Length: 366
Ligand code: NAD
Image (cartoon, rainbow, N blue to C red; front, side, top):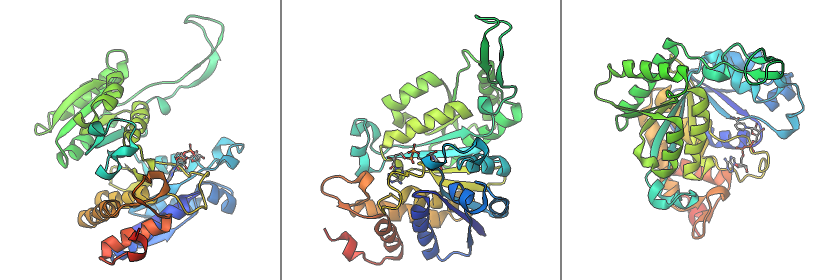
């Protein structure tokens, strides 16, 4: 098994180093190879996704990605900006299914802006279709309006579209994921207004016939946005299109209040995947050694589960993360009174210690 390690920019290098440390102590038969991506690759090779990095990602079973971006690249032409690397990898690897779990650890319920009883024990999974919808639909552009409310004026337009195979494959992914969880799928649409999402609803309903053991409910996106903050624990798996998923997955992430804890995965039809924390490169804290590495470490656990067929190793990492939280160790972003503040490296060391059974006397002592 081969893992491409793409640390990227900002805190990306710091948090990926901790995840690599954790992967190494598992003593599993995989090979890891590192390559630059994003701003780091632009500096080194003049492009955010150099051919050599793309070739490595394509040849690997999985990609562990840190984060890309820095405000200093905001003036570059669009195709050279660090964020283009993620879009390029999604396209080249055919990553159509984005998994964003939102889990609220009992120790961190205080970090949520919702009442603790609403989020304690929260464990939901948002599955977002990643390669279609209005973000990629053609035609798009600017032109002079020939009709509408203001004919003859300048206008801009995009095209929302989904084909049957695109909806079918993401629906299968959602039903299969639900089978490994609480067997409930909520398909989010806007079928009352949009033709594209009436079609989405019809196709998801058809695919559901193959999964009689999984409950399916349909929900309009506006209602889903409300229910996520009113009663988020009612959900299990939520499946939706690219644009609604973009918005709802960020909303769900915020339910937990701790962006530094949230992993993500983007998979293709062959279960090859790109695994990354849900947050960005955090240039404001880069180089300070205070970033939370747990989202990246948990992304590595998702990688072991989904792409490398090592569910036991994934469960060991998840248990180790739970254990360091129970021990009261916190990076600055999740720190609260009565807990012990640790650095990025100390947090990684503590996860390694929890995995290997070693004691972290120096770190844990208050
Ligand atoms: P961000 O997620 O990088 O940071 C938002 C806030 O959360 C900051 O205050 C940051 O310090 C904090 N934060 C993020 N991750 C943290 C962690 N692990 N531990 C502790 N605190 C953490 O979002 P932003 O500031 O809007 O974007 C910064 C850069 O990241 C931009 O260039 C943006 O384009 C890029 N970005 C990249 C990705 C990606 O690589 N997938 C995703 C989002 C943003």
